[in-house]
Length: 263
Image (cartoon, rainbow, N blue to C red; front, top):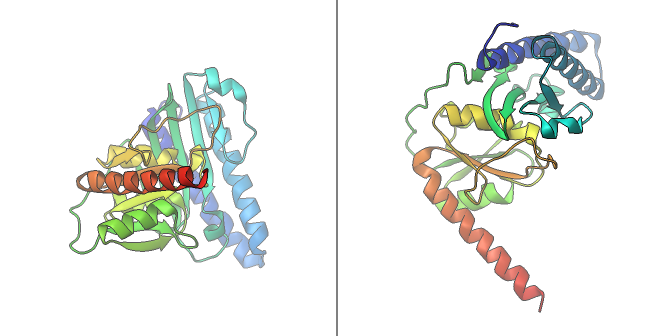
């Protein structure tokens, strides 16, 4: 693992962590462990495993993890690994749901350059070492991936303005990889995410040839002082203009409404 390229390393660590999570899930299920304990142990085990691997093979790099303390020295570092050890904790804690993921990504100079998203319960890992090939789009309405609980405003706008349909799924990684795999066409999100939620999905999606950006069309940048990164668009390239225009119009209407309310 030490001599692997950054691209392959991301895959190997995601695979190893995913395998450990599957084994833990099965073991704790046999014991009759509560959902809450399953989720807590999953987060802890995955975090320690990823940080341990990176500490051994890339000791000079910094790590930003959802489950770890934020070492602010990362802001002056050239290389920072941004990881979500267990994306979709609720789904992991609800066997046999498969829509949870492991995110591992490398950021250099604020740009995601390598990464992997493992979907262990589906037996799939998608990574930048062997970028996935984007399949042809299936005929029919545009499929917009969204939260299975509360579809974001961005997802609702894109579905409404393109005549598409919302498809609910669990973790951010699972939703993004559904678009990469051709099971969906768009993943538009607004609100409630952080860098670790979308960094690895974004770099893998971009490697597969998908459009990736903020919902206003600006580039996605990582390893910021504030790790809150609430919105993004991942979609098939032929749909990017339609999605961005729909989101632009919606944001314009919202600004006008807020302005009128001030008076």
